[in-house]
Amino acid sequence: MEPEDDLKSRIEAALVRGQLTQWQKQFLLDIRDRLIKYGPRTRLSAKQWAKLYEIIGAAPASLNTLPQSPPNKTYSPPRWKPSRRRSPLEREARYLARRFARTFGIVLALVVGSLIYSFIVKDRQIPWPSMPSFARSGTGDRAPLARSQFSVTDGDTIRLDGTAKGTRLVGFNAPESIEPRCAVEGDLGRRAKARLTELVSSAKLELQMIPCSCPQGDRGTDRCNYGRTCGHLFANGQDVGDVLISEGLAVPFICGATSCPPTPRPWCG
Image 1 (tube, rainbow, N blue to C red):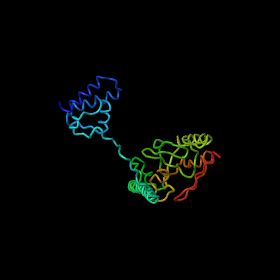
Image 2: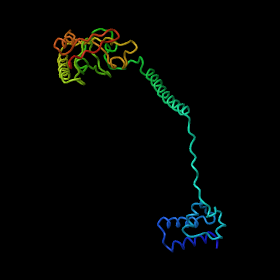
Image 3: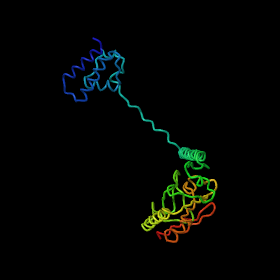
Image 4: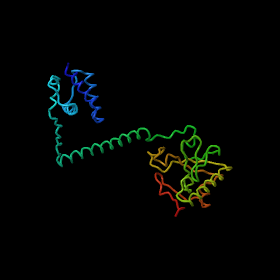
């Protein structure tokens, strides 16, 4: 009988005898299946041999012909070798290198983003193909404006049809109705918007487009007045801002050629 056959017989006998734990039974079944599948090419570790003979008894001499390590060989787990401790200087150098790489990556991303932004946005005029010609030119001349050509956004802002963003009416500042800082400002803002809507509802209207008070290179971009254009709106020859100021629904707000003072918002104290 071949050695592996004898070993299988001994495993079968141990399984028949019983008195095994569930783990021991499963272990013997696994070894038996490997012997059936691989025959003399079966390979077991020294630890597996030791556990096998602990269950089925000492190995007979005939099993020494199997190409395995001796069953009685003591199993020694691999020794753990501690890693080399790095010196404080090495740890500091590694920390600085990681920090430099992270910082360099952030700076590089910002530089690339700035270049892309400058290439796409800088000095680009916002395309409003259906905007009235006088609004595109910004010559400062008054031009007739029909009520159907715009909508009222706020007490000091309108939006011309075909434009991506609104037109800020200059010379005054009305309370915010969309995002007020307090309840008083919200109430006055809604009244200012309603009053401007009333002023333009049936009057003869004229719009005078002017350059916004921004540096020359920023005009026409989001860096200038949030991308809005600027102008004066006249109802029956009177600037609507003067009307709102006289009625307590706005305050004067005069800008210079390239910049504006802090926006006056006295309604919330």
